Length: 147
Image 1 (cartoon, helix red, strand yellow):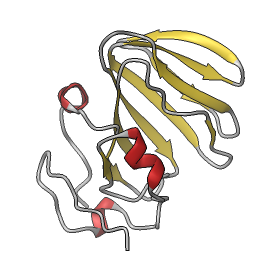
Image 2 (cartoon, one colour; image 1 turned 45 degrees about the horizontal axis):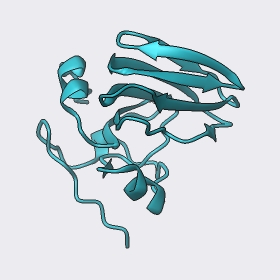
Image 3 (cartoon, one colour; image 1 turned 45 degrees about the vertical axis):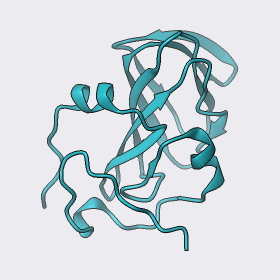
Image 4 (cartoon, one colour; image 1 turned 135 degrees about the vertical axis):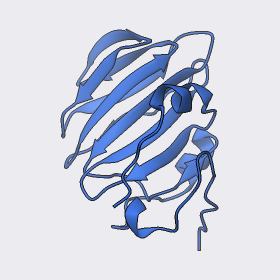
């Protein structure tokens, strides 16, 4: 087992992709996100998984079951399974954050540069973990086939 050991603050602040799956374990997944000003993740509900967010840069708001809360750098957010939620960048600069899904939500190694690209493709977790994949070096993007 290799696990994952990296400077998460550096990786998150350097990320410009809407979604970048960094590591996928059997029961947990680490994903970087960058939201442009006025961009949002999009309202969603994960009925079978909890989600944790950590804001590294920027300002915004999170909605959890209709309750709005302002968020900023260094804030943590926990969304329990079944809660309708959304994260919105309300600032003038990118909102940089990372999220942990338990269990995983996306295919391992997926990189989506934009929200439109993420919405245009189906990429739900297929059971393959980072440990089972060909090793990637730090910062390497995986070419994901849509076939």
